[in-house]
Length: 597
Image 1 (cartoon, rainbow, N blue to C red):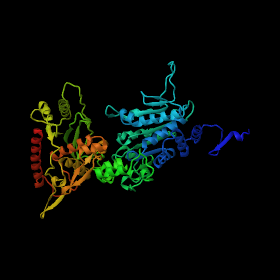
Image 2 (image 1 turned 120 degrees about the vertical axis):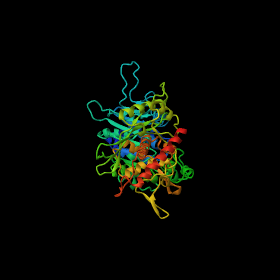
Image 3 (image 1 turned 30 degrees about the vertical axis):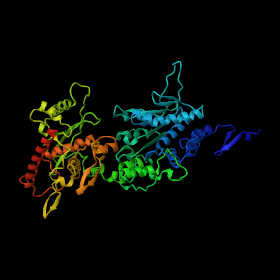
Image 4 (image 1 turned 90 degrees about the vertical axis):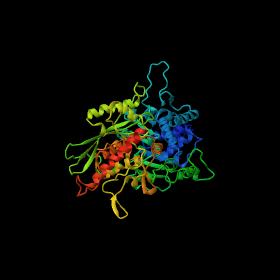
């Protein structure tokens, strides 16, 4: 038999007769030198998992991972995002068992067990059943797949710096993602630079913004590849930040189909798997039970509405127009109006205001901190926002949570030399908090704010007028807002737009842009209900709640939201007298109402 008869040709290369088809595809992937072809991954997929379907969303996603350093899967529920990532990660592991490290991240450990880690194990087990010679051993205790065989004699330590390793980013209800990734490097062969480091992020939308910071270290590695996936919750979540179009979300045009674009974040390639464009629409005779269906999208629409976050998050998989435009504040708004700038103050004469957003139990944070009313060099009244802090509450302590908070605040006010009457707290639903304060402070206690009240009769700002039966007067908050909580949140926005906020911490602003609003009866503004917001973004905006209440405290102590100062304004202005009188009435009513709760 001639040498030619002992070989066959595929992909333009001669292989010995009898070469395992899967080993051939792995060889082609390794030969590609960092630029493997999608056809080899698709061929390997078909050999490893012959029962599985290669629908167009899967093919599109796998192609993007193969051809791009960073890929972001933005999409609806049941679009196969996690499956596609798992397939790529496992094929790469089988090809490079000793020179690759794949970090698989998601939220808490239990969620990973049910979702992404469960998917990896299921695919790994099926592949090993079809090809016993494949490398890899599952370590359930560490949620990893390693190329290292167990050393029964215990003479060699097993290394977990290669293979596939799951990394939960939430532990004990707290985000700990960045610390988990520090020091991760490609597992190079000794003396070589052939290591491959990959990161596969599932449920990326519900991570903290700092989650993305790990990429600044990884991107310098030539062998790095990153893949993110999730359902968009808000344009400020890590998933939407990573997938933001080069022209910004304001420039995004929704075609109603699956879309691709390049993001401004490391030039990532983004695929938005649109549920309205599901592969189940392609052929009525061929239906994929594991993919979203047209009927499910329509059920979401009919149940929750055309503009609902449920429809866009689960059924469409893209940010809605409301997500882009209908939000209380934006980072752009803060930048434009100098809210992040350090204030240039006329003098250091400030009125210090301290506020506590009371919370204990239920996962919300108890946030406290100081803001300062001062005068800028141009004579304009403004607020300096100091960095807030979290009041530590020990649930197993002998003191009740309210007593711990009261003691912390008592000591902090004494340290900052702030009188108790300049300290405010949200008393809505916290009736016992007043008793805890009274025990320490006596008659001069922190001032309660009733966030569940109606919008006040105070002016929205001191240069917004309406014509009332031929009489020009200031527009009242009760005419502009539906509820007092809306008034507080939008007072922050009004103060920012009036360029009366300085030194705003970025993390406070990040939370501020999470909340959306709508227009309700009487053409009034209403912020998104807190429970609805928490369902959508899966967290509470405690820092922004704190600031909104702090600005309310400033308003009760004479701060005036005003974009254009009046030339005729002076201390004898009847407008100020009216404001102070109404302020006293409002404060008295709220204090009585809050103490009754």
